[in-house]
Length: 409
Image 1 (tube, rainbow, N blue to C red):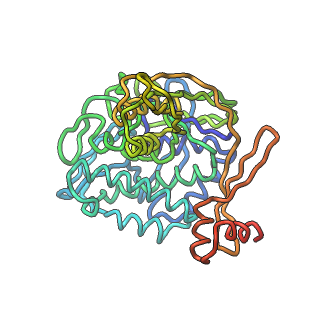
Image 2: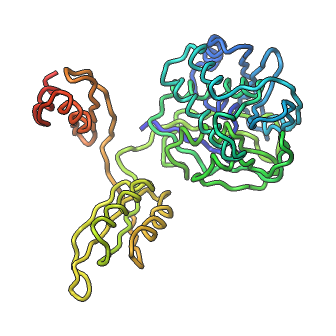
Image 3: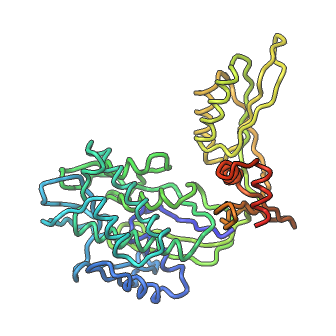
């Protein structure tokens, strides 16, 4: 499995993440030319060599109308914006117009020569940021505005990362726990704690720590990009690296100010998981069904029940939950909250799985998704049952008839 691991010991910012991914490409200069050909108004990308603590890497410079700027987001203000950037470590003041989420979408979908799915990724990242700002400032998302200069800088960074992810096409993205830094940051509303409220909101559900660096290490853009692309957060899996990239920030710390991206191959056929189980004899079928639903929402890989004989000759239910080791604590909390159990057993298991992918096929019943699994000398294919049901309803035929039509297409 083609796996991308992001080492975020010095937090995450849009330009640093883009620079780290850029180093993974065989022709980074050609990609920079491609970025500059997108036609983002006033934007010029430049790849610069950078050294931090003796480690060589790349800094991705974004110039807006000839001036290098750094990201910042805020809710409606008075037009004068003060901010502190992790990348530069400097404070700036600007008086510019502001852009709404609708304006961002107009730029992305109306003016950038990008595949539709890359545009979707860009807007999904921006929506995470807008939602966080909305929550932090208690205003509707429609009232959130982004500083004009900061907007174009962030559009440039987010576009670069989304296009790089598309170009690298990893099967899965894993990120380390995120160091946020500590201390305070100055913004339009005054002095705020690090991580800033919007960044903290985005990082919910992600393992973070302050580390021992004073300063803002994780920006809203960096947090949103990680949350959007990373399938999980934790230790680096066993993998065979094929390329390693270092994306450098501008500011110097006692530790190398960089994100490290490692692209490599992992064995998709096996992984280590937890099996959590408990017995209950005082829950209704409806309550057990709801608990199973909540366990899947919490990240369970599988949940199933087995009839069991309990103490005092009571019929009971044995609940089994399979989950990734990173999700263990969340699943434990969910089990205790939604079942009546007083204790949970844990087993560590090794799971062997087939590689899986989903393809969409055009059939006489319209587009139908097909799950293809392979490995261990076996390949099997299965059409998505929801699509078969849709076809059956639309044509007024049975499930088996719809399957026969689709299979014969």
